Amino acid sequence: MGGLDVQPNPEKRPETDSSVIETALWANFASAGGQDEYCRNWLALLCSLISNTIQGVLALSDSESESFTPVAKWPEEGVDSERLADISERVLEERCGLLVELDMPAGQGTHISSVYGVAYPIFIDDRLYGAVAVEVSASSEKQLKSVMGHLQWGVSWMELLFRRRQVQEDAASLTRMKSALDILAGVLSEKTFEGACMAFVTDMATQLNCDRVSLAFIHKKKARIQAISHSAQIRKRMNLVRAIGLAMDEAIMQRNEVFYPLPQDAEVLIVRDHEQLAKQHGAGSILTMPFYGDEKYYGALTLERPSEQQFNNEEAMFCRSVASLLFPALEIKRKGDRLLLLKMWDALKDQLVRLFGPHYLGRKLLIMAIAAVVIFFSFYMSDYRISANTVLEGSVRRVVVAPFEGYVKEAQVRAGDVVGIGMLICTLDDRDLRLERLNWLSKRTQYQRQYQEAVAGHNRAEAKIIEAQLDQATARLNMVESQMERTRIVAPFKGIVTSGDLSQRLGGSVEKGEILFEVAPLDAYRIILEVGERRIADVRVGQHGHMILSALPHKHFDFIVEKIIPISIAKEGLNYFRVEASPAAISERLRPGMEGVGKIYVDRRKLISIWTRGLREWLKLWAWSWWP
Image (tube, rainbow, N blue to C red; front, side, top):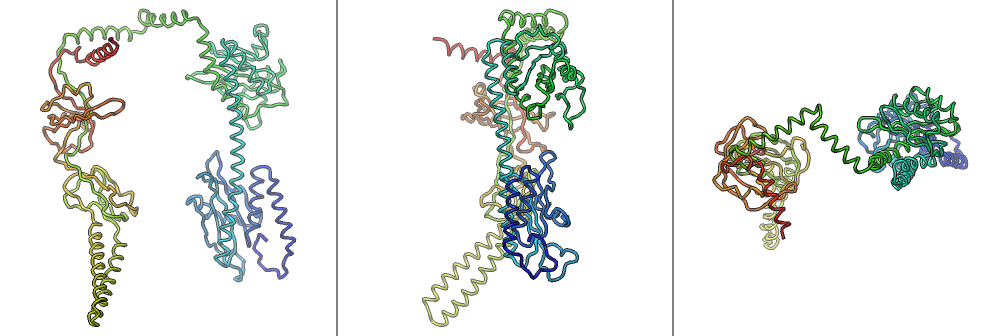
């Protein structure tokens, strides 16, 4: 029923046999356990539903390597599945269903119908998960459409598999998150650091059914036990504390989580201290997790329970997520438990030691340098200049737009190219226009002939109608010819293309009025300065200044302020005014869009006044706002 019969059997199978086989396939598919079994039974059922199926292959993505590998084929033996490899790869690359005619299998007679490869991708939420491909024999287009329909229908069952797996993962993640938040709430509800640590280990022991959970912080490169679940007094159990601390140090030294006993597929680790802890204190299964932060290991967590309950990766992930939330909270509580005077004294002592004690020579030199700078600036006179971000713009900017809807045929220039007046910039495809022109030419010729016949037959009414149609055809023809002329877009003047690149859109469509290029002249520029609102009152028309561009940092360009636009512009939380200036000289190295820093000369003032003006103005505004 699912294969290709070389010699057709004249005797037909009973319909009951087909229904029994199909019922069995449905039963196997419904009772499938793991993903591999699900995929095998699904592919077998799909191939059985498609008539004249020779073979089928299912390829799914590997989450680790992000590659696609075959996970099931039908039949499992006796058929060369390489015949479907090429079409499967094409479907994964092109992300659409494909139908390809294949070579006839070797040894088949001429009476066999043509053989085709049909494949369809498996998409879930716009993500490609794999593809299914089948090889079938078909003699009509209707049969091939039926095959493609079966594939599209069958893909929904694969989506069900991934949806179920996603639901399970989401449920597990939600459970871990809820448990972590419950534990965090219990820790934060404690007022003291010790109580928070005890609540943490107790809740962890309850959540994971552990006999004992131990928490330690690193002190002098050793794990110091802070809390053990179900144990209020740690000092009375020194042997246990010492054994747990050695196990934690063993995990920290190896910089890895340690499972004891080691799983079969785990990397080789040293577990000597974990083995001693298990022998001396009866823990059959141990999990130790060191925690890293601020470029150092700052704590560790050890969990113990009976040997019949081995720890797994999901529980390790739960511990990792919980600890990432809890350790910062515990550190905050540890620092918060100290007395306020101790906190203040520690902070003051640290600063005084750095200032007057040994070492920290840079800080001392910095304070002396600041004092010297303040004295120097209090007497030194300097030029008062207003700094502003500067942008170089062309005095004129011409926009080149698409004259009508069409497709890009050629693009001769792109942003940064220098063009001359009348130079060809780009060409739009005129094939449709040429066809339309031929159409209207033929209609115009037809109307002319009909008009002549109507005139010859003295049918004035019909002649008037045909004359109007002829005028309409002539107008449409003129319009098409005008559009054909405008397919060649040329530069309006000599300048540089500041924006636009159609080299990556050849053959692509453009909309009417869409901006294709922007052209600016090379011999006329204006300088735009963004002056802050606190300094705009010092700017006057006619003031001189100079600017330095980021592209030309070793050259100054002088300018003269020509216009102040009295409209503020909000930018990055501040208000700026637009000031326009003209360059004193034009350089060939200048290009529109260059940015830099410009300074407008105002007068000469004391340097301390220049540097502290902003602070003094802020203090004045603040004092005035609070003054009654």
